[in-house]
Image (cartoon, rainbow, N blue to C red):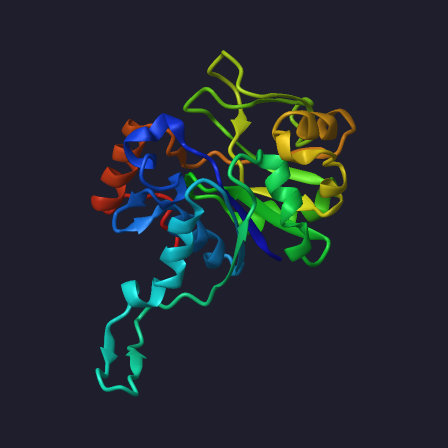
Length: 260
């Protein structure tokens, strides 16, 4: 099952960092936040990634192009027939990464639609490139398969300002989805989706369409949206204060999302 990560946004609320690089490349410790997200998925056995590039996508391309050089000890010969040897590390990433240009200003539904050609199978995972948590990815997949819905999202308690979810009693089924409400209570969209490929067939004229608005709202109305409720740690990196918080947790060895 492949993992799609949306990496194309401009991150305007974190302009202190994103003026020079895309938000997924803003570091936590000495690695970009997208690396932390990929490590979470890889911990649960999902190691094939599709990164949807947009704003400053060349920075992400260069990072993965030079990944071995930046993360391994290297011995190289300076002769004309030069050789390079990357020394084994205690921890090496067994990842396959597709870097897909999905447009500078494409919205989230359009980015998903544009990478459809790289998907195989009936189900895929996707998330945003700017949030971490101790999400049990295997549990989200198991619940998705058991429920038989088209889309499962991970619902979390807010730090506030994200899409609020209305549940049917104490069940997982969702009856409404309100993107970015004014109240700061209840459950919100934490990303970390599990989706049937059929969801992509719903995305018409998708480039200027936010996936989190009409497509998700329609799925809720049609009884095809359900949630995995995550009560543990979840934190986006939308502001400079959140950047400082995540780095503080990492540097102090208290990062709850480090499950690997």
